Image (tube, rainbow, N blue to C red; front, side, top):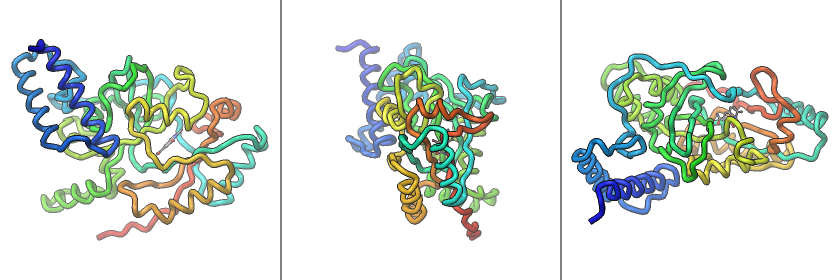
Length: 317
Ligand SMILES: Cc1ccc2cc(C(N)=O)cc(O)c2n1
């Protein structure tokens, strides 16, 4: 029968596919019991042949020993932050500045602004090799071991691309409430909000803690579109999705600031129905050429803005 390598590769392929269907598509094609059966089979086979275990094995998601510290990581491409808009007038000012600079032949793309922790994932030939926090935008902390525990992060892309991908790691609302319930029962300090809980979980030196926190992620950009031939941000998001990465589906192209404002009003009302917290809406000029024409300041792009929802009064229990 098949060599051990062939059996291992077939198990990798099936388990990674089922993991992708469950955690990225939210649409599993097999029951959990089948996934667990295959995982047990893989653990048994790897136990008999430990020398054949490779980094992209599904059993390698939860790392070994806790780290003693986080290494520093220099991002290949600076991670930009976003200027804020707090009102319709701010949005119209933003729109006017764009039109003054490049005329009115352009489109926007809007995304839900996930309230989590900005991270960067580096893939080399399709393999996830390093993950880091944003830090100051140029240098962050290496949290690869913790990010590997996020099941919706593929260990290997569907195409052997080498690229830096940016996203927001977050803790779903239900997981946050459950975590604080357990902490309260244990007399521990509660997390103030899902964002702090996600950040606190990813800053643990022991990856088993991050693995227990049911973290998730939405990817929203690349370090350098140039290497992919993508000409618009909306295309870039579609490409990330095609590569097997989790991209928020509520994104929407808007042909005018009026459409942007309608989208914002829709999500201002619909926000409580989301499984995760958002703190605003990100609005970007879609064309990469036009983004380059508009350029960036030291920290923020001129072609993007974050509309921030009014801070809701914190309902302390
Ligand atoms: C350039 C940039 C910076 C921060 C961002 C943050 C988010 C977010 N928190 O969802 C989405 C984006 O498209 C972003 N884009």
